[in-house]
Image 1 (spheres, rainbow, N blue to C red):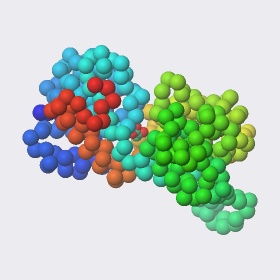
Image 2 (tube, rainbow, N blue to C red; image 1 turned 180 degrees about the vertical axis):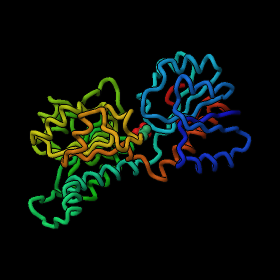
Image 3 (cartoon, protein in one colour; image 1 turned 90 degrees about the horizontal axis):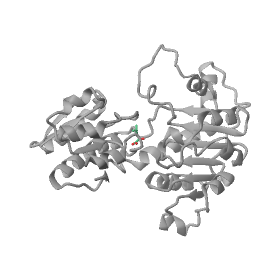
Image 4 (tube, rainbow, N blue to C red; image 1 turned 60 degrees about the horizontal axis):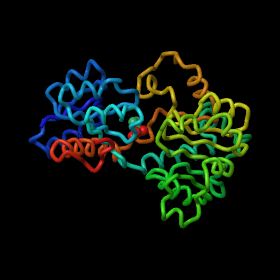
Length: 331
Ligand code: COI
């Protein structure tokens, strides 16, 4: 049995080596490049592909895999919005993901960024570096007593709720499939709009689908509380970014925590030191004290990285040996 893994980073190699040690009968080849039409040639003769990328996969990936006799694609992350699932099905390719590598990694990061935003971290970092040790005028806000709106109460949303409740926030939430335990707490509202109307801090924890493209836009922002904060550690496509930036600039919103951006693929996790960014909106957001923008790092913890490697390889092995896996998305 032969598995090829794409886009393998240095920080993942120890986890790959450990799994290889536990599965000596399986050949695992590591490749550092992403999965492209050209690099797919390296998979010839392999039975399964393990991949990781935030940008689009090749449009005809599954036709090519089928032609090459490769039966499985196991992604080392949770989101599958950059894959053509219908084409995988048509070609009889199984897709698996890693649905819960560490909900805490993502939720803890989101909360830490909210605290930084409320505490004017960018402003104080700058002031302190200039030896300006004065307090005024940057009075901070607190989470305690605020209403936090959570859209999507899956694994990450649930941890977010728990942490925010620990800080003393009131929670309001929406999910088309309410969690029975959370429902007992009476936190669910009837619609996403109801959540937007009531929350001081709105946090998005939903996968990107064609139905929720630009869920946060000029119209939905208008419904939000004045001075509210938006948190997006999920997918960039959920937010119409120019509308968000305008709302922060004109004071409708107090700020935003963004660990993802709809145009992130050619910037995030790239070394662009010394270069002028070819995206004026990204440059503008980086310059704003009210927007905390990070390059999709909420997931990036030791626990999560280890789980992503182990579960994706386990899934590929399961699919090849039994025809299915607990993490099947298509198949
Ligand atoms: C995911 O697991 O889907 C993430 O958002 C992490 C990412 C860097 C691919």
